[in-house]
Image (cartoon, rainbow, N blue to C red; front, side):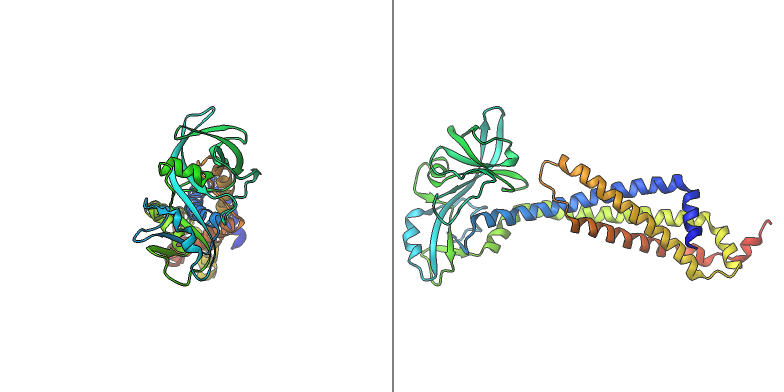
Length: 350
């Protein structure tokens, strides 16, 4: 039955190739949307990890440092340091703004302000971290080279370092500057910050500040994108159903075309189980070949997306395994025709 099934697929090569192409295209879109969904989540992990620290302290009654605009006074730094369990404190500023490069127009960016020499220590992939007012490190997706000049709120910034993977809010690149620079831009020069990043776990109340864990900060950062990520997940799931429908339709049509063949097989004593094996094999072959083609197509299309999409080996293996399962299930579902065919059909009109 295996050889017969493969020969049948060869005989209907046009239909099989068309079905494989459609299935591969749908599977590649499902893989890319799934990877895009995961990339939005991973970038929040990278952003929170950039700051380090064991806890965050934010103003009372706010959702988090990235989604609220309620600053805290940096004068509280000394008071926080005196709390039992705290080993170091770094005030940080986070906000959104636009920059203008030397050879490009305005670009939306996230801005992070930190205190040089504190707990937050940027690690650029090239150049160095900003150490004084007038310097900045930028994410590589901004497309501004080290040594270039940016304009942020009318202030000139010399790019001294380049970061990798420091994006959030749906792939928006980040500009890292000193806290003093950030205070001049966002707080009119006042001694304010968005939050404190703390090494150690405070074991007591810290005035009117609220303590948040890194995971709580991460969840708060993800919240504005929850609708978009849910929609991406839903569309990816629907594309999987479309792919399953294509494979099932191919197997079903193959069963209809081969009804006379199945009748002959049953008249010759071939069991329904072996007929089922043939259709399952066809679905599995289609699923396997289509998934391999889908992974290749997804790798080609991924760089065209405006955000980083990481298609890992695990993603590829997951796609192949799920596509195989889809093919097998499609073959099982399409077996209704072969099971019900009457062996007498083999001798009709003969």
